[in-house]
Image 1 (cartoon, rainbow, N blue to C red):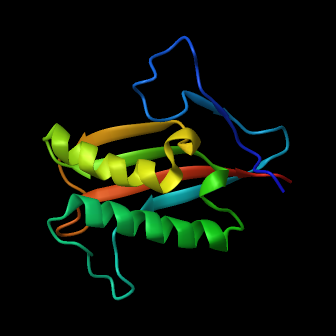
Image 2 (cartoon, one colour):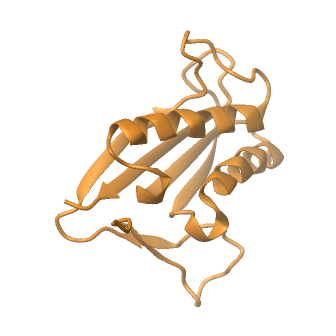
Length: 136
């Protein structure tokens, strides 16, 4: 079954953004709201201490598990928010590239990339929030 989400890529807005500018879920779609995916191992330790790319990859790995348990996949994600504990744009870009590559440039839903002062766990550098839509 094709995904419920329709991504909108604008031809009137810059193509420098590596995500869709909007997304549509059909009427009656079931929405799946995920908690922020953290770079936690099963034992609760933070993966990839000091490594933005490794933490972003672990966030995506954990997000895929949560999506699967909700009956969804990355292609059902309608929006994301990527939170990065850093004041350096290069660190944000490092985390972003991992998230973007997980979805694929043409399949990246609307997203917001944000620098934060601190995240919830000791040594946590990245967190990825998502909302998905499923056909009823």
